Length: 103
Image (tube, rainbow, N blue to C red; front, side, top):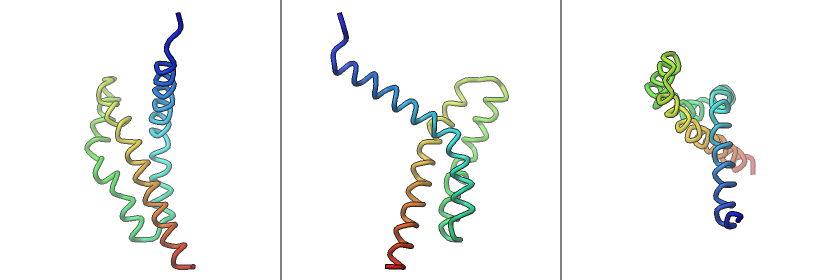
């Protein structure tokens, strides 16, 4: 017997959410460097909030990687999507504010 349509949908949604979450892990450092370099002074300062707030978290994740422990790396996996969302929001708000200045 096959699974119910709801179960199939939830399995698909779970896979998609997992892929997005894990894609954010390598995307976060690249996006962090890009926003810090391309945004003007005050916006770049706002873009520095994720590494400032996550320094201890990133340090413990790196220590977990060095010790080959799996549990410490999960904190980085959960931190990265939130940081990516924040950086994309900062970039979007900056773009909207620049658009309003020129309009």
